[in-house]
Image (tube, rainbow, N blue to C red; front, side, top):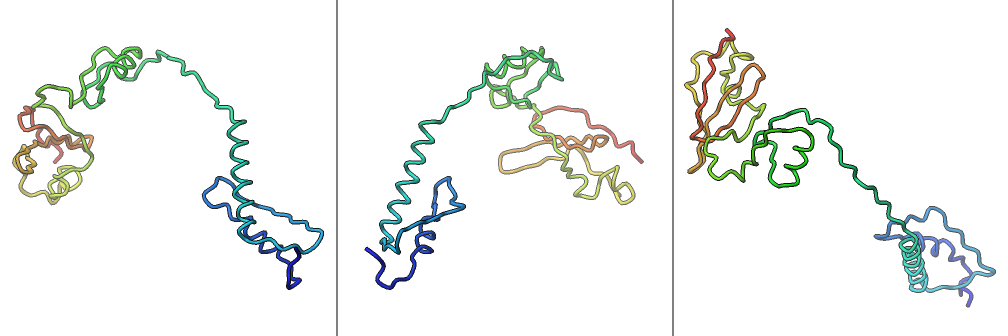
Amino acid sequence: EQTKTGESIEENIKTQLAKTGFTPYTANEINIMFSQNWFLPISKINEMRRTVYDQLTQIRLANYKREEHQLVKTSHPYPETKLDFMYNVSNKTARKFYERHGVTEIEKAFELQWDPGKSRVMTTKYCIKYELKKCPIHQKDIVGVKVKEPLVLKQGELEYKLKFNCKPCEMEIWEKDAEFEIEEDHFH
């Protein structure tokens, strides 16, 4: 049936058809051609739109060809031949990968070591000596009294020793039972 007011509903139809919702589609251009100014309820327009997008999705899925690429194993040399626990080698697949690439010594991941107790937990550029204004490189003019090392971080029952590598500007965090030499600051 034709519209009762005689006004065109073309813009209203375009607005409804342009709503793509949560679909992967966008309606960039919508052309409507009627022989006369026909009335269509919005519910029917929305139903048509949903049907069209559903059908388009089904067509795309039916014609989709998944491309699969075979991974070709290589044996390019890895830059390191010895890996410590920080490389996090925690399964056979990772171990075989590194061995295939020439690594000869592979330490287990930290969490796989039965009783590490004396391991380095982390190396960081963050430095507590710097925060305390005791950095022998960047704050040598204001250092004053040196801190007594090793410094220890404590949280509840957990304790970690700190080791400072000032030349590369790194701080290492070690488990409390770790033994290491404390390097003297020779930067003055």
